[in-house]
Image: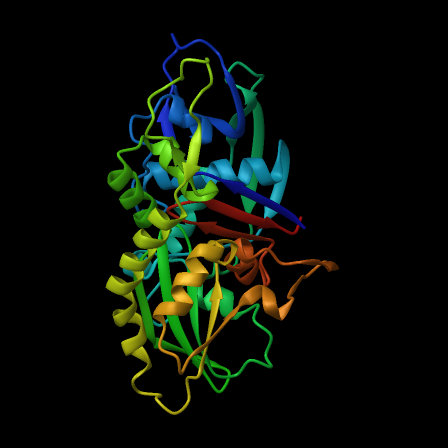
Length: 347
């Protein structure tokens, strides 16, 4: 099963710009306009930010969908079914009605039209244009909360727990009681990107430097530039800075999540953590310190969930949401996140 991950940064490209390599990114041609999506778009974007949220009627959201489909499917003709995860605060903009976890008919038609012919370039902005033609099958398009999607891939032996899906854009929480998700307990707060933004402000760093500092836990030395012997002063550890930022973020947001447990005080004893935060030891360390002692924290990788087509490959916690969407029976599961685009392709 193919997995695709892409940063959702978008920048327009003018014709006078010299061609350059776009590794890990994609150029989408949309009418007379060209858009670069991915890490390489930071070369042209001032902030490196995307418009948060969106629906299939919005150009920026269509570009994100086109980019992940073109990378996952490649050039040629493809007939697929597809599903999405959506943040809770925009869920009703997608659904047929509040009781249905399916894309509305109007949005289906809009999506089908938007993706029927995707013109794209990869490798370099001057590369040959390729065409990905997509025909959407006339069937329901599942639209799920991220927590609902992740619930689909958690082994059924786990019956009663709180689920924390912690990604770049969102930190979503939901309770599962006696094997059934309690949608009325769903809650959302801001995710890891807020932490990176606060680290950037605290250390007075550029965006790219702040992201490197976050992931590598090193910041530029306070000593300016190159010393007398010609050696660059390099980087120094900033784990304590990162831990402080995480501590403040969790301390500020955790009460909103924990308080959703109050109707099940004698039932909820465990918390399962999924999403990109599972890869961050510092975040997990601080989270364990902050969560009340009566709750035991597990990470989804402790369940050793395998990818559906290969029992020898364990599911990446960053892709559990996309796999959970795909598990509904669609060929392509799309997690159009605010921090990353992720797709799982069973084609």
